[in-house]
Image 1 (cartoon, rainbow, N blue to C red):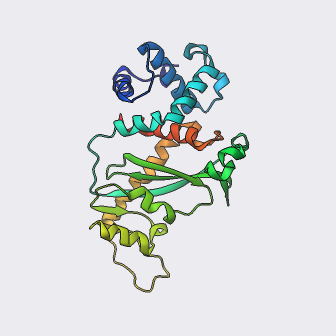
Image 2 (image 1 turned 30 degrees about the vertical axis):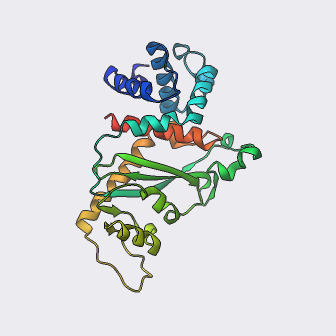
Length: 253
């Protein structure tokens, strides 16, 4: 079980951030750590909450508290609090499709149904698409969710807005006039290969473009967490909470 525990150094950084998040009950440090490590155990193993080992407390209690923190956006705030001095020379954007388990279906209509919970059907079946922005070192800055059939380009500006960057790297899926115009308005360089059907082909510094693999490395890192590799959550904010927690842990490496 030690393999799924957080070391003391990581925990102290996490706990210091949690205590600064408004309206977040951290209570007794030992109990709070046990709860966070219980969430980490579920995220890492992909197990059901009911299978949580007794040393982390009863699974339903951990699940309910996890849900409350998700509704308050605590996990995302934790991720944002741990972002320190990102390298903004380049922003790298990309997406990946994650298969959704059948138990992820059935979101109530009052909550918008499956479409509002970033669930859809792509060529690969019932799925969710994760859209990500990472800095020039491959550290996660922003995450968005859509249904698996969603395109990459419509999410690009939302992934980039609010950042002060010098350049953007993306694959051909982001070669759209509105995206290029947005980058130009920010006086930044767009390192995005032109689609083959463009009349005017842009020159690309392919040597620098090799750095785009870092966003793919990030996707690979989060998929080591089995609760992210396959989606089991009905509600998008629950699944996003796992993504935010995993992103926070990457910043602690």
